[in-house]
Structures are given as C-alpha cells and as structure tokens.
Length: 148
Image (cartoon, rainbow, N blue to C red; front, side, top):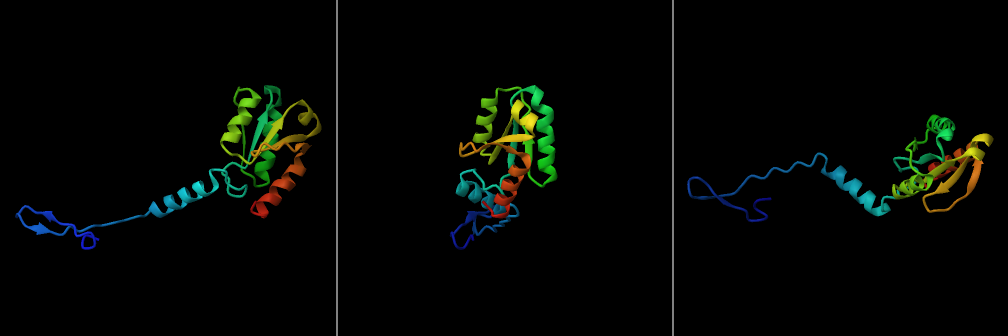
C-alpha cells in the first residue's frame, strides 16, 4: 500500500525510504458486519436474532415468583428471556424494554398469575392482551422459525 499512496519517510541516513505497512483485521470484519446489522435493523432485530427475545415484567413484587416460573419455562423452550425484577414502576419497565427494542414484553399481574397467563405487548406498541403461556410460546416459536 505504500506504493499505492506514494508514501515515503526520511530515514536516519537522510534519504527517502518507503515504509512497510502491515495490516491485520482479525476482528475488524466481524465488527463491521455487526455494525451493518445494527444499522440495517435500527437496533430492532428480528425475533430470531434478538439477544433478548422476551422480557417478563411483573407489576408488583408479589408477582415475582410466577414471573420467574415464566422465564424458566421460556428458557427451557429455547427462548432468550429475562426477568425485569427492578423495583421500578411497570410503565418504566415497559418503556425501558421498548427502548431496548425487545420484541416481546410479558406483563404479569394478579389476573395472569391466577390463570397461568401472560399479557403480551409487542415492541411496536401493539397489545394483543392476555393469553395462556403455551399460546405465547406457539406464537414466539413460529416467529422464530419463520425468521420474522
């Protein structure tokens, strides 16, 4: 490349020399690839590619145990799921999950806990509502298989 750019330097002997240029990009191409992916999707990765596919959001501390069960079930079924167990308000948790562009938010309150359901919200702000956990799993697995 030094020939291509007509690069020279003055050495200790006072003469012009062409530098040797060594270029290694062991990780550079991988980093550029991820940069392109992030830019292409605007951070809102499709479900199959999203690092966190579902976030369980309990409304109150009394819903934490059921929310943990939900997350464990999702992980057992192969989904990448997390529990937002912070002591923040539910609206703040939902807003944070939307800002993180997590595809599925599973809101868990008294009704959901009693009936073994989850209230599904999508990052697009759609709100399909409460459904049995197995129905949600069917939807999520289909979206993952279809590369949605």
